[in-house]
Amino acid sequence: MLDLQNAEIFRAALESLQTGVCVVDHDRKISYWNDGAEKITGYLRQDVLGRFCGDILLIKSHEKKAALCDQYCPLVAAMRDGRARESRVYLHHKSGYPVPVSLRAVPIRDVHGHVIGATESFVERPWASKRHRPVSSLAVGNGLDALTQLPDSAFTETYLADRFKFASEHVIPLGLLSIQLDHLDTLTATHGLEAAEAILNVIAHTLRNGLDPQDFVGRWAGDQFLAIISNCSVDDLLTTAERLKRLAHSSEIIWWGDQLSVTVSVGGAVLVPGEPLEALLGRTVDALKGAGASGGNSVLVRGIPETT
Image (cartoon, rainbow, N blue to C red; front, side, top):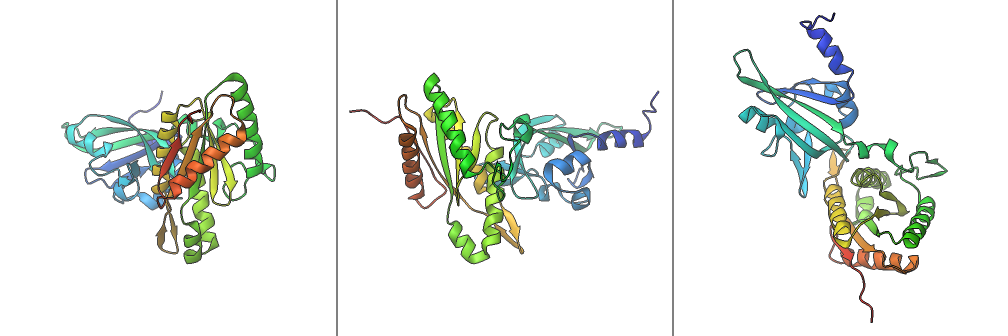
């Protein structure tokens, strides 16, 4: 029978979990960080032990990143009133992109019942995993873009034609989002091509993690991506576009000591029954131009066009 009084047994069990586990003291300094937390966030334990949790754990909130250890923090709330908290949030990966997780914070008490810290467990939400993507078997040179690790433009075009044909034949709602990085040429001129490529890679991860499993995103042009959204209304498409815009705005990289980020413009349109693919793409491109005309970091989704 296991010796449940042996702390090393519990430590070994926690280390083996794929679930991320973080323990903080009452001052919110990280005192434990397991293998699962390393894999999910990209931060190694030597990066985080003894540091203030707000320096590491970041949550996507509105238009910016907010430290988990501010007023939105489940850890703070759990320690304040002694009650567990559950949240579905985006954590900021060390590489700069958001990771969608389900998170639970629980207070830790001493023998007298006083709260002395908190533990937080988090797991990637299932649809965020590459295993659940319909294009997970692609390889570079065989449909996969080497830079962004998303489907390349040729595969994206073929996949779009197939999805469009199926949606048209079965009268299934379908939406397109054209997503363009704003002012990437300016960033390239200032920081160089490698920095621009690094930003493209981070935004690609961000877009992939911001979509549902049945949806698709691939490389479309140099600084553009195309997302195919299933079973959506105009309102659904607008909600998805706004989410992707917010997540992209809060993504970043550290480049030679500089913190670099970009915004995106998003244009979208929903398929009209009987509409040819070229018309749907044309309306999507027009919407993107309209979004970009305001200077960037904007969304425009076209509704069903009126007939005369």
